[in-house]
Image 1 (cartoon, rainbow, N blue to C red):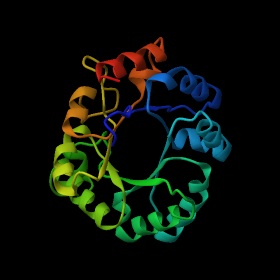
Image 2 (image 1 turned 180 degrees about the horizontal axis):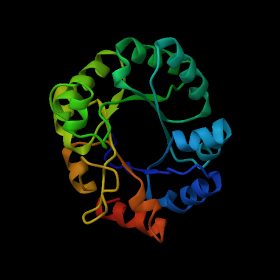
Image 3 (image 1 turned 180 degrees about the vertical axis):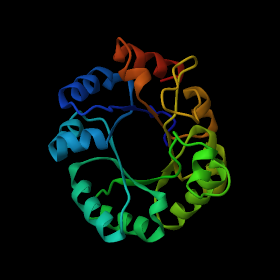
Image 4 (image 1 turned 90 degrees about the vertical axis):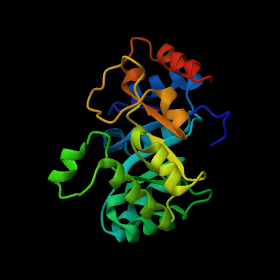
Length: 233
């Protein structure tokens, strides 16, 4: 990522279009992009996505597609024309599914970047063990990251704790997006594997997804400005 590009993508985790649009407008001068998830997309559909795209900030559709290859390809073909810069899938869907997603995303040019979620930041080793996954979250993230690269995916979503290992395994041009970013002293909420914005950026993250520390603040614009300033943007 260009070192002069603001790495902060604010997570607009709300079903309300007016609220999302208001926050997006207020924080736009201090962030590099906007992230919306299933909650927003389910409530507002394609028109909601197009509304945020019109703000001029890159939009990350955090929809985590996970189904058989044909179904994911169909969903990607429906989402890609909406104008989002990034769309993601679940790496655990397998290589064939990820390849289908990338091929479908190419139905529009320039195609959106396609990322794969490795291990959710709400999960710990005990959670993986309960699901029958052997090894630590770190080992599973790196295993899936290698698979995503082989499948032609542009990068991954992983917790800050795995950034350096993924970078070592997948190289300098592999896009690393990290949620689980919390300013020092901030509430962890439902995140478990977290890091401060400064440390995550220093570790090699390209994009920092930051939600409640900004959107839950009394003044979201000031919260975004302060975090950006701490990072030198």
